[in-house]
Image (cartoon, rainbow, N blue to C red; front, top):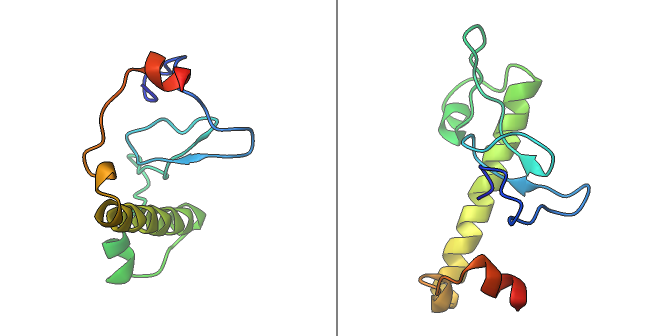
Amino acid sequence: MARESDPEFSLPPMEKYYVVDSDYPNRQGFLAPYKSSRNNVVRYHMSQFNYGHPPRNKEELFNRYHASLRSVIKSTFRVWKKKWRILFDFPRYSIDIQKWV
């Protein structure tokens, strides 16, 4: 829903962002990493920084912090899913039901 700019999908409050991967558009409310272009290769994955040279420019530095933040978020959800099993396979509700609650 977020990728398709669905009006039913709630955007974060002003000056807040969803940290998203490179599949999402980099637009207001979405914080996506820099992508490589034909002329400029921009590294993103943590392994590329851990076993390679330090960031070469501001885009790679941003991507390093972005990848690190995503890693922390994923780890946090893994811990939460172990503690609260309902998060592992929680029931799916339609947008209408979610908005009603």
